[in-house]
Length: 109
Image 1 (cartoon, rainbow, N blue to C red):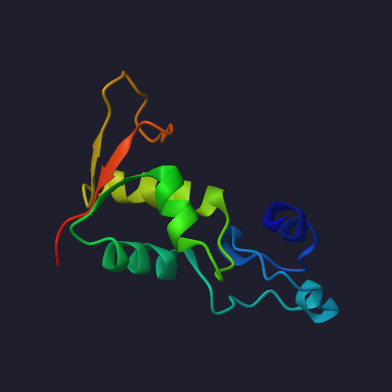
Image 2: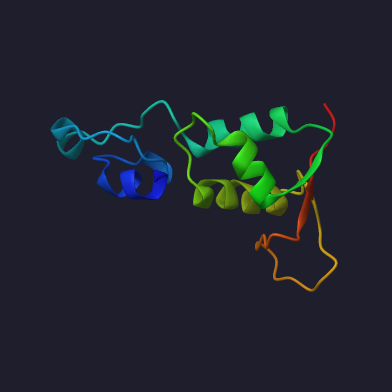
């Protein structure tokens, strides 16, 4: 459902949909209150000291938040590139991919 509503949003700063239609958004392209930087900080804080898969992270964290699965994949890719998280896989994987079996470990705070 989120994906369907996201396509109808009148704005999506940094790829995070507003989930609303507002004609002013087409004329004014201001960054809104939700950003990927905000999501990155939330995820690092909320999952500190834990190890989860990408689907577990999305299912647990996205409730009542405007972020899409692709937003979570993007921030995890960015965090991996910064070496801010550990990513482990029993199978070979391409860097920056997060198949359901890939485990993401967040540093303790």
